[in-house]
Length: 355
Image (tube, rainbow, N blue to C red):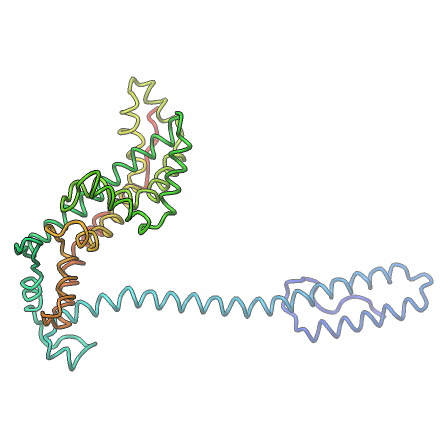
């Protein structure tokens, strides 16, 4: 009898399980037959045992592959479902917000999800008029003042935080001095402590040590930047750490100093990372209203004005007008993101040292 395997030797070849089992039974029958009269059949018996081992391995591989294929199919469909839902949330909700802002209240009641039959621009003028708030002294602050405060707050917080964390990360990553490891570990601690944990210390500092209440500049310098500097410090520290000190030594050879090495060499290399940091901090500060509620009542931003408008039960505001307010607040952040995206893409290629 022929002891050769009648199916493919390739373990990854697609073979029905029933064929593998049938061949396995045939080889086992041959083994029983040969072992019953083993004289002069040592080579055949060894070959049959090798065939049985290969068939067992192929049977196991086929069973595992079937289970893996099912798991892979479920995994792929799950990923596609998540991707579709995510894309819908990114596209549908903003589009719905914009379309709703262009509808009148009467049209919205009968057409909540369709396109507007007629563009109703009065929602924007209505929300602009009603977003004015009053400070603790009864002074009215209109929407244009709120826009200025939003720009000052978001821009100042972003710029100061990026400047502070960039300088700190560069010093810790590139220089050795006593207390270096302590400062590095402190950055990790700040990163893992929840923002709510900083509120008691911030309240003590701002009320008893440095009176920063209703002072935007001092609030930026003493509070807002430290809430998020830990994470960004670690990101910039890693970026600086990956850049070799040879760049600075080349600057020293050319007659430059530490300032030149930092500004002319290292700073352009981490500009994409710093730009991403600036955009993220800017977006968070632009949408921040809790800080103005707690510390800056006389300089409210647009987010705080819209929050007060929504929270004021005496003011009747339609959903289209409210969506118009959200649209006005979102437009500057989208513009900042688009501008920064071009900068990031243009700065990813870093030039080398001159020869």
